[in-house]
Image (cartoon, rainbow, N blue to C red; front, side, top):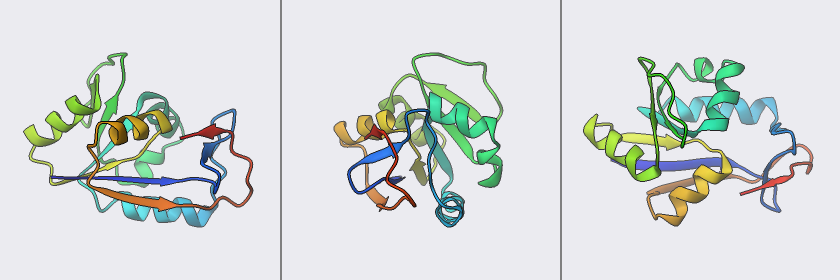
Length: 137
């Protein structure tokens, strides 16, 4: 099992604007979809999941098996599981024999996986079209 964190950030460490917009270029989003499709599952924080679901971002990735880390449980969906912690997400991945999973954000989730030393690989893009992001990793 391999966990890969992939994220885009400004050079000074910001990942989104104050209203949670990610000012990524179309090319960066396309690259993200291409990368995400290479994984058997994606792990997201609740807010990131809700934002991606609302604008059909998961659909653009081929509706991957999704693990949402959240303190708020949600009804089960056939392709989505809610768990309470990064370690619980890892447990689900092992139980389902998932060979590789993408940690797809947000910032709090990324930091939790880093602090718990659960990341095997890191992919990082340091570029926005404009340096307007306000939420730090």
